[in-house]
Figure 1 (spheres, rainbow, N blue to C red):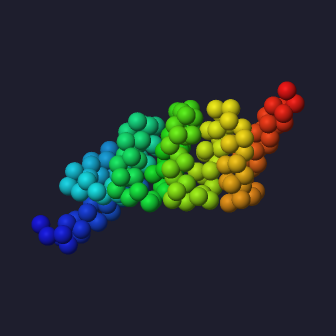
Figure 2 (cartoon, rainbow, N blue to C red; figure 1 turned 90 degrees about the vertical axis):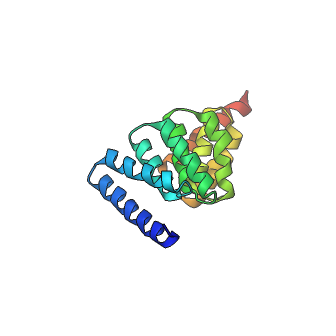
Figure 3 (cartoon, helix red, strand yellow; figure 1 turned 30 degrees about the vertical axis):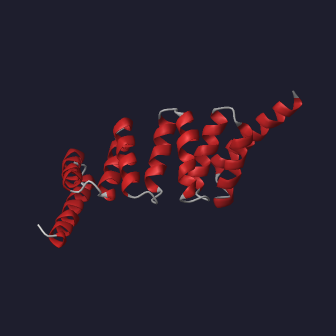
Length: 165
């Protein structure tokens, strides 16, 4: 099969997978996306869609694996990193947030969600000074975000308690 024909086939299969998701036929979408990655193991979008599906169904290990594959296919796309951050939050794996997500900042240093998630993870690990930096950076992107404001207030309170001791 020539590459033009393959490309058309993958586009058709992607459309079918998207349609299956819209119709809540998730198992059908997974089968189609698995077929795509079996024939094209560099298809970022298929891995990314699988990561989204698995995340939505709380299959976090599978979602994480698909995110890692998506990152390998397209290292400069921030979207799989956002899912990873949410997986780590959902599984209370704050060490992974702190150790893994800073890599995403090389792609988009001012990204609100990545900075917020790292700040949140740092705060949960008791690293309040570092958390403050990331939360402040997040707030530069979205100054009125209530969650980030609240998190920064909590971090500032923790820091002020530490300085008193």
